Amino acid sequence: MKVLKKALVGLAMGLAAASANATLYNFSFTDQGYTFTATMDIVFTGQNVAITVTNTSPNQANEPAITGFGLSTTGAITGASGIAWNPDISTSWTVLVNQDLDGVTIEFGAEGDNGGKGGLYASGVDGAFAGPPQYFGPHTLTATLTGTIGDVIVSGSNNQCGQTALCSPFMRVQNWGPNGGSLKLVGTPGVPPSDIPEPATLALLGLALAGIGFARRRR
View 1 (cartoon, helix red, strand yellow):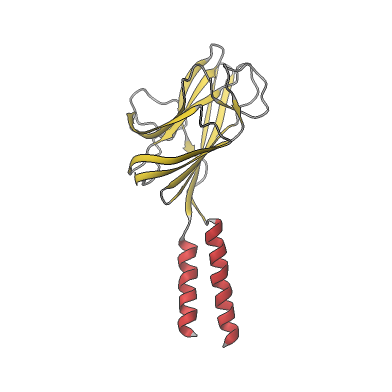
View 2 (cartoon, helix red, strand yellow):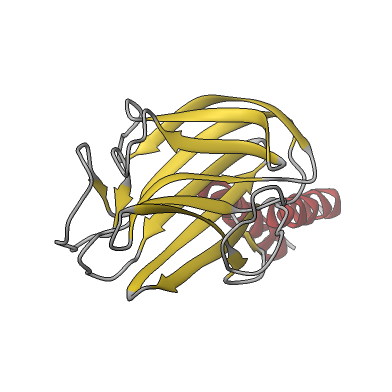
């Protein structure tokens, strides 16, 4: 019985340690009376990544569209497979991996982007939009990465990216301002990285703890 109890305790501790690393990043820029705000939630679970992008910009004359986003890590990502979107926009967006673009390791962007075409807009806005297709509300991309991942590099303050400087994590914005211009912005962490137990981990942890309780009752 003691052996069983020790095994269950070890299982519970190991399962409690299994988690996903998540960080929320904020993006914000205001100029010429126009405002762009957005969030990017990045969750790594082993070699899997889930990135939720949400345009939270207010209602305005021209509605800014997210047409690309990306990040750099301290590792060396060499590929991505099993790429999926929820809601699905896979026919409008592509993924570039290991691109030598401002040091970016992985980048996601709208295909044939033209002034916000295929962009992600804020929910509930009704200003002027770029050409279709248009997508609204939060969108989540999931993929399995190859290579080493490491930690997300946070390169600077929440502002426009320079032309050559490392910019991570970043968002590309189109249909911006009175002339429908473009921006590339760097985000800042909204909350510290956190360990989030996965649902399957929580279920197994519950079983392990129940087993410990049963072992105690049997003594």
